[in-house]
Image 1 (cartoon, rainbow, N blue to C red):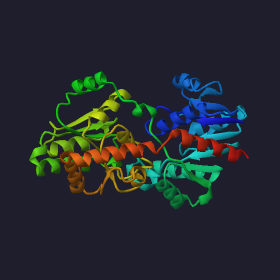
Image 2: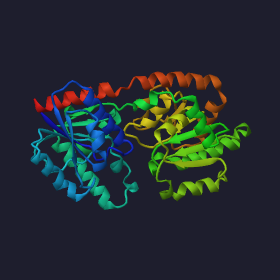
Image 3: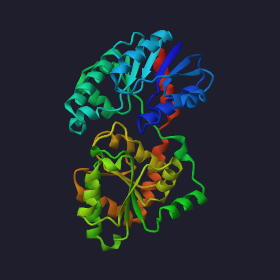
Image 4: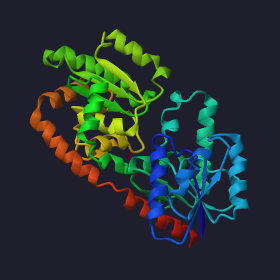
Length: 371
């Protein structure tokens, strides 16, 4: 059987993690299937490293473009593909072979105000409707996302499979002492710090995190030296975060690092005193699990998929209440026993998720659809 996978978002956050682990684990499975991987030219070598059953095919059409609606189906027909896996919500309507789709979340429908225009909302809704109704099976990454898909698109529940994400293998590898010390010295991390890592988008709720950090420092003078580190790309697009820092006169205590390499991120997780993830909505939410695997206590939201992901291994807060976030941070920073308890619970919880098991289930779905 020839299976095609759209891997053009291989280097993205979130979906990129899913695609990388999908290819890696399929390459490790014992299977006679041949995989045709639609990718960018720069990623051909990555695809070839998955094994002899994987063949890269350069696709120049942009993601979320009109061109992909014609180019991708044409490629699939030309290559006589039996099954196509769209690992995000775009499944071109002209696709003629059997197909499966992974829909990670419905954030564009839950928070349309974050899209650039009404046209963007209409496009996202139309593409997701096509994907959910055209695909033989819809895979998603949490029960929360499944509920959203059922709510917005009313497809038969039997066609939706929940398959959890997991963390990249690199976060289970303990950085050596020299690397951790290098990161500590390079970023001058001499004081305790609260860490956030993830995308810098409005639904990540970082303005309230900054306000909560301000409240914590006001209420507990013993925490005056604590810093807040925010890691994520595209910070320059959100001037409101900078304004929030200056409004509370925190410019010496809140630091924006932008994108950092994987090795640096792994070290920062381990150096952090607490990881805070106050997101308003997540299809799954990988950063809390990454922090847990690194032995870092986690505070996260009690909404969306996050309670489902972290279980009882994190402190849960109302993400709309800065005072609640501030109180949770102060508790973790000042209570050694609580920190140790969260570290142990978090490490065990992260171990419960496995890309090997998850992608094995994806492979079963491929076979079920073709049968």
